[in-house]
Length: 263
Image 1 (cartoon, rainbow, N blue to C red):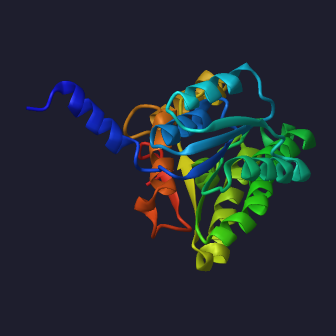
Image 2 (cartoon, rainbow, N blue to C red; image 1 turned 90 degrees about the vertical axis):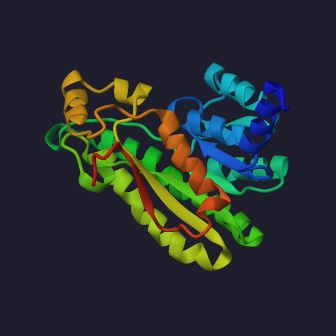
Image 3 (cartoon, helix red, strand yellow; image 1 turned 120 degrees about the horizontal axis):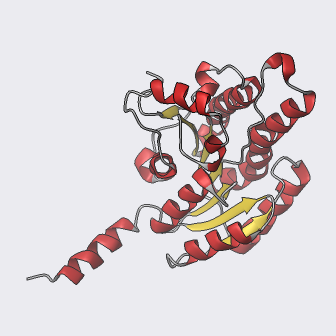
């Protein structure tokens, strides 16, 4: 008869096999959805490079949590919106890890406001951090994945990138751009074995959404058929599917993780 310990051990071995041998780069991973994705990937056996604007206490803590899974993990300071900075950090990651199999473009901010009151700075900041950063990382990593003839690029979009949302024209535009970027990259790189997909989260409970007003949060809740906000782990599960070989024939798609908001 198998003991409980042996059953637990076997489950752990199976659990950690999905991304074993793969190297993932996750941007904006010091907190929220990015952190959840990085931890999920590590639990499935992937080595992880995380990036954020600075390697602060949050990033160091995440690095330690990742390493606890027995995988290689390192945090890098990177201004994802800066082209040269991004290429430099990707070179560092490649030198350290030897390959890059998965890229998750998750770095993002909000600077909400009605169009008539929105400043040029609010617009530029959101477009640069949310959309230009994805271009920077895809541009830097494309030659690596093309040479490997394999890779999975996952761009974090949003339901508002599909449906729009009052007071978030800059954020909605940046997230709609992520979908267009995803579809184009999928067509460009498919012949080299590189896949690109987007995830469109709905109302996910993170520090970013906590900054929204009570009125906005109530409006979101009323639109969710499952009658709850999502968790970062809900999104991480979708990201794991797209990173793994289970999705080897899925490319150019936008998967909604929104509790049924956009149907």
